[in-house]
Length: 366
Length: 105
Image (tube, rainbow over the protein chains, first blue to last red):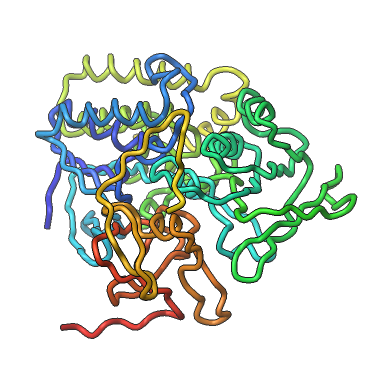
């Protein structure tokens, strides 16, 4: 059985930030990530980030991943990374975590502290034929295109005009894919105007108040039927047939939280955080004292705040192992929380602030 | 292979080109990249057939979670082709039903 001081589950923006933070404070860290490549969603994000300078605003996502990789390299003596390795089980009795590399190489880890940075998975909506090949998650399309340079299809219908739907649509256009349109159930786009404007400049139609009725095709997608939705949610007008070979689903994400359930962490359903999340104190610690949570696993937000939450989790794991003085902890902690509150400021952050207020218990100590 | 030819932002670095087989047919892909990506770039979108309804299934989540892209790889069924790296000479087959567990050698 492997031993480590800190085990970080998930090598995306939150997990890598947590690993770098804990290792830079002297902890031995093991990172496991299920993908072939480290970096989570960052490595496929070609757009420039917003937010603050500290979180690399103005830098493209995949370049932010490179910055994190350099930090990992600087701390390589204390960080071990296992890619293509999935943490599949948490045993409450003894805190042992079982993992599998590839499809059949099982092993166990006994960590002293755990940081769950497992990220998110895509939601799906029901419609006939939604299981046909050609109905792809937006994240999957981004992976094909931006990581591996593979054309996802020839003509794509995007479902969902949140930030992911808007961004992935113009990314496909940049890659030379024709976009039939973006379908959005709501009467307005869910994402930032700047992204919607970019889609419109590229000539991509955005069908507001529309929904997908079905995917067409016998063995794979050959089209889709969409229809307008009235103010009360009923269908209006005539169904429209769209020719496409891919239907890209960008209908939201939900936190990946199976291990947190297995570990017996107190969970709470928070719609503003997009699903079940672990209750946490004001230092991202769950109800299980050796487990912290960070990033989308703690509630769907975005990569900038995920990176800072990762720092918070890594810092606290290191503190619990007595790796730093209280004064240094206080200085770093207040800096990170200031950055988080800056990222969550203003009307855009209102939903996330409310969601966090529902999931945060302040302190576990009574 | 149906790859992105020109991109305004990205410059794709591919690994070594290798030969593999899909249902016995020779194809080319890049070593170390997901099997599913290699198949997709060769125009293959149906990866398996469901046990009960015989529905075709393909690529979907690309993060090893949804089980849509399970295939038989070198005789082993239920391989998550979206997170399994392609290697030279790999034999990839459409999975029908649940697949048979290969005999232990």
